[in-house]
Structures are given as structure tokens and as C-alpha cells.
Length: 447
Image (tube, helix red, strand yellow):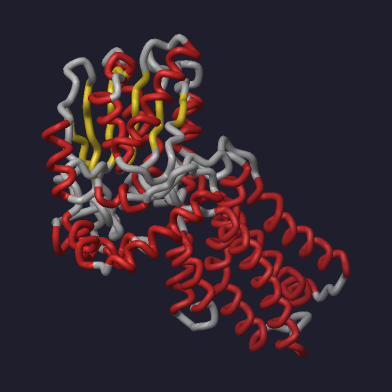
């Protein structure tokens, strides 16, 4: 859907581009004049349509302004393409224009102008769009020289860029409207806890763009910083130390934990077994395998011991280089088996003084999802049921409230999508806004 202001702007750019393309020939045909100033005016119009009009300022950040202007140019490119072809043919056959004797020369100039408009637009979109993804970028490159197909792909690119720009404009307007309201300034700060096989990295945040959006709305955030792969008990102990350190250092009293994947189990252990109960107000688990993974148990039990140990050693060696002191790949995997989680749930009761809630999601069609979750989805689907590539919807349910996070897009919501790991937006799910709502709800509950 195109809004009226956007439609008028694209129409204006298209009219100017078309005028710039035909002005020299039209001037010569109608007025029998071949003055150089007409060429100059044409060049000025062309430059203005390519650089000035699409670059108009808006509430969007510069990156999104560039993407929006690129989309406008691509729309104009398609709009003026057919009229220019029709005009060229009519001019060559029925008018005494400047290029009557050199039709191909005129056609070549118009072709170059169209190329400039196209590349100006496509480069802007390719360099700035996050919603496009790698797959569509590759398809666009491969289909660029296939007639008709290239137009269909270009329309898809324009549609995706438009959805992203409109989503970002809405977010920017939301930010302006609620600026200073601090709707995410909870009574207690947030502790974001990562899942297994990852670390909290400063340069590439595990939680994508979510923390920045929360902080923009007043949230105070800390990170779990536990090692990437330990047993639940060992990770829980590290988290308990971190929680106590935050409380004692800041005097905040308690924290609200938001934990992804195995981080939810680590947090439950810290609360129930390591004395963190008095320091935790709430625990929100995101796609946590509370009931384990049957497919992980099957794979682990059927892989030869030499293969398991070989994978573990390579993993442990790599993460020692990244800062882990005692990584234990085998212990982490064993604790995620369905039988292990069944035992864990019996032995680790929830605290009556902590508010528990959970979030779950699933992939719709694995072929549209990202590697390797599209592969692991198949195993989890066979053994466990509908899942996010690793964790089933049923396994992720825990606590007083369960939130099912849904997208009707073909790829659904994967284990990575719920934490914005790949910084990829969906047309019908604003994951950053979801977390803003999640945290503002904690604030309303008094946490």
C-alpha cells in the first residue's frame, strides 16, 4: 500500500525524469530549436530527480532515508520505462526531432539515463535494507538479466523496502510520541540472559536491536555474561553471582530476568538453587526448552562417542579463545535432553516470590527459514512437533502466563528471530516493539 504523499512524490519524480529524457527531442520537434541550454535544463532536471527529490528529510534515521529514496527511484524507473519506449518509437516514426536521423543515438541516451536511475535506486536499497535478506538480494542479482522475471523480482524488492520503511516510520513516530515517558523504566533493572553456544558480545549484541529500543524507552539493562556452554547448574551459579553483584553494586534490590533458550533454565536454577530468589522480581523465558528436546536426546544417544567428543573438543577449544574458562559442550547438551529436563523440573520448583512468564513461537515453512534452523526444524518436527527450529511450542510454556509469538509470513518466527539475532524485520511482526510491550507490561505490574 502506498500513501498519498508517497504516491505524489514518486509521480513527481517520474514526470521530471520523463521530461528530462524527452525534452531535447521534443524541443527540436516542436520549436525546431537545438540550443544547448535545452540540454542543460534536461541535465539539471535529471540530476534533481536522482539526487535532490529522493533525498528529502523525514523523521527516519539516515539509513532508512536512503532506503526510502532508493525505493522511490526504483518505482520511478518502472513508471517511466514504458512511456519512454512508446515516445521513442513515435518520435522516430512521426516527428522531425533532433534525433530523427539518429534514433539509436537517442535510444542509447535514454537507456543510459534509465540505467543511472535504476542503479542509483537499487544500490541504495541493497546497502540499507535489513528486511530484504540475503536470499532476495541473490535472486535479484541472478534474475537481473532475465526479461519479465527481473521486473517481478524488482516489484518484490520495492514491496519489501516499502514495508520496512513504513514500519520504521511508525516506530519513529511512536518514539516521538512517547519520548520522555520512559514506558520501559521498570522498578527493577533488566538482566538479559543469553542461551547456549553464545556469549554476550559488545560489538554484536546477542539480542540484536532490542536493547537499544528498550533503553530508548527508559530501560536499564545488564547482561548475564555466563559462559557459552556449561551444565545448567554451573551456568546457574555464574548467573547467581552476577545477579548478586548487580544488586550489591547498584543497590537496585532486585532484577527482572529476560532469558532466551537454555538461559531460562540457567535462571530457574539460580533462583531456586543458588539463593537468587530474594534478588529476582520476575523471570520471562523466551523459547526456553523447559521440557527438553527429544530430537537432541536421540541425536546425542545415536552419535558415536568419538564423534561427540570430537565435536565437543573443537567447540571447547574455539570458545576458550573467545573468553570461556571452562566450556563444557557435552554437559550443556546432556542437560537439554528431554529426560534431563524432566528430572530438572521435578527437582527445581518455582519460587512463590517470583513472577514467571514465558514466550514461544514456531517456524511455518522451514524452506523459508535460515540455516541451520531450517535443517534442525525437520528433526524437531519429527520427534517433538511444531517448533522454532530447536524448541517446540509446548516445551516453551512455563509460568503464570504464556505468550505465543506469531507471524503469518512463510518463515514464521524462529529461535533466532525471537531475539532479533539476524536483525531481520517481518511485515507483520515488529520484534523490537514486542519487547517494548513486554517490558512496559512488567512496569505496569509493579516489577
